Image (tube, helix red, strand yellow):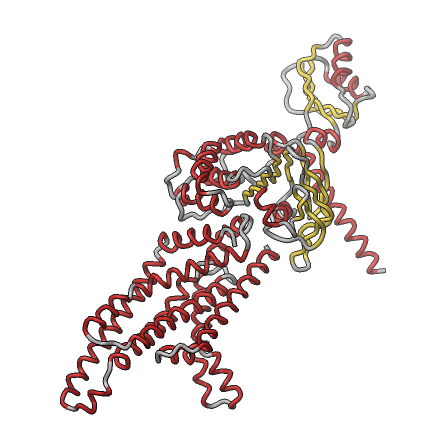
Length: 256
Length: 328
């Protein structure tokens, strides 16, 4: 794995010198901020309305009204912006030919891929860190349940990382950044909505489709439980596309 | 140092190079010559471990490109065609990235970058964005990245393409400078460059090697005829008759417009015969004035064109004969 850090360092510099990082972080934070504000305002409104019925009051809590919808919305925004982080990761190097030099330095393919992948995960962490003020506000104003919060953020991180590995694989297939972004978005969306069909297909297939769907795995994390099966889904998903990227780079060498 | 045996590479069904064999000894500067699409880049890409060969072997410093790829990559500095650089980076951070990739320890990195910047003359532009550099400077940055880590072998693909004549000369001087105690393979289709820089030339066409020798040997062996230009003050008919009658000379032609009373001729003889001494003796013996007598050196360019076109005419005749076979 020697040399991964050189690639990692260069990629991070790349994210910030081409304004991709700012655009992605900016739009993600703007949208999540909007959702956070909307959810808190909604909470505010229904709390006022429910003030004189204790029955209803008991059923209103921060987790259900603010945190879970917020996490779900942020997950959808991630679906939109993660392809933008990965679109150039290999496409640009292929288009400009710099990949030829990169692949002749004494750095293994695995190290190149890890350097690039970890740099994009680092960007995801930076973006998620930007939402910490939401949490600070929640803890200042109320008593949120930390279970769903931790589970939700873990889910976002795993989901984002999965999108990133899928995006990197697709980026390694094409020289065109736009094609890379659109294909990644399409593929990610497919994994997202896959279980919508689960209700009307055969039972055997339904189980498989559910297991493949991202939404399905995200939901249980969002409830505050952290089941091994959901975590391993995301980890396997990521590992699979990292492996596919390895193969894709190797194929590129053969053709190059 | 570098040994290539029966190297073949297919792109799909199309062979880019076929059964290429050559050796490069330590300290040599070898020029790779050939028309576009001849397989120069393919061969270089195999040697730099960018792309694996379909069959055959390539060894660098006794290590096989397939099995010891990472070790070889430490020993080889590569400058690809068109110098692909991260154009959004500044020069120094870019060279830092290269040094980091090549595993130069942190403590020596600054020193190493200073060394290569001095070697290629980059000190004035170290803080510029690569995107804003002129083509000549981009080329220098490309050379600098190849030199980082002090590799004993340099592989340069078209190092002077797209530069203006002054820049070409500068880059050529640079290459000559750091070719001392290094082994260099450079490809080019600019012939003067190859004949000035290289000890040995390998001419490659359509994926196979067609000739391999020192530039002067190539010119001597593959030249079709040796020629000299003669200007004589004397009666035209007699002069021509005299020269045509000489055993060394195969053809005499009038060229250009001569001044009053002078004859301007192009004289051809067999490739390894120099007719000049005989001509001078004969002209002086007749009492005419010999105004000009200059052997015309066959340039590498002529050899190159000859070799490359010979091949294709052979191909064409082979094609037509096979077509005849099919029709019968």
